[in-house]
Amino acid sequence: MTQEEYKVRILIRNRIREYGAALEASEEMEQILSGRMVEKGKTTYVFYEETNEDGGITASRLAIRHDEVSLKRTGAVSWDMRFAPGVISNGIYRTPQGDFSMDVETKNLMLERENDTVRVGLSYELEIQKAHRQCCELWMRIEKRDR
Image (cartoon, rainbow, N blue to C red; front, side):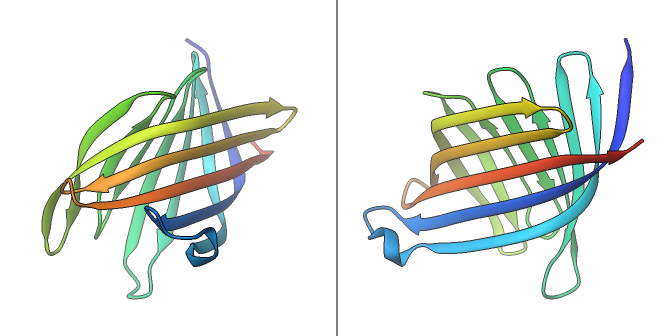
């Protein structure tokens, strides 16, 4: 199996709002990170790290397939989410305060590949402990830099 690896620049934008709240009440974040992308078979993996306000590092692995995306994060807060249209996936949200059950319902998934750029767009509902519910959107633009 052939494996290609590239350095990448990643633009991440996300919007989160409490379920039922007005769009104006949403919280938006944007960041630009460096990472690496590995193309292995029919799956594209993107690896990157983020530093939080306390200096802690969270490592992330994004796996992109033709009809689904999964995002695994490990660090002070850890989780593994699977996104596929019309699917509700279950998981555990691990924090220093304890573990919480998590359900993710994917509303829309957009994947585009063009030359040296991969675009991912997700809209989903996140529910923690069957009580706290949020509407979320995540957009990523991943640009190959070199080998």
